[in-house]
Length: 214
Image (cartoon, rainbow, N blue to C red; front, side):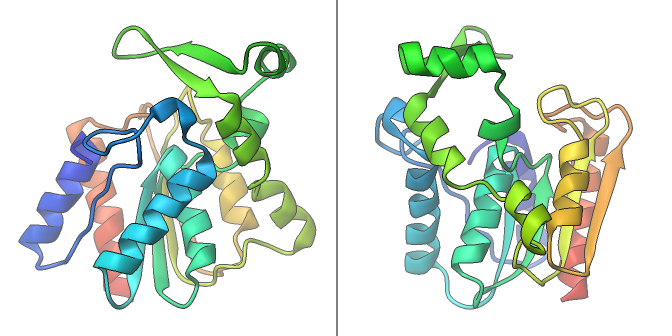
């Protein structure tokens, strides 16, 4: 919750008199817990627990990368409260399209995959997380059954040089959402982190535009 994008949005919200809540999932950042035991469902439960306990009234959810998947799941769990969504390089269904056959076999054999990190060292994806992700797929079901059942405004922003989550995922998500008010912004040269000053400015602009539309 102290990352560049979250901190920038928090500062923007404070400057505009807009309440904002940030959180770290269990096992992340300042939250206690064992990262390697956390499933996608556990992270969703963290979100719902915190917003139910700490926030009253309507919600606009903002999610980046895997948080974009969780944003969608949380919105579906709280349809009566969520009025808008902002997805930053969202990664719904990452466990479905993000792993090849060899990596799926490695889950079965080792129970984990260790990935190289941009920050040095490695970070793991655990089988418990992968299994939970496979139980919460959205895009394929939406394509076959008429859409993800959220009808509020949605704004997606994605870098066209993203090598982690292809920008085409945002296009699939736009098509799969039931809402008629969905806009996708592609940022030329933007990578997955979208942390250049111009990227941050674009995120804040998209967020402000959505809030003004409500």
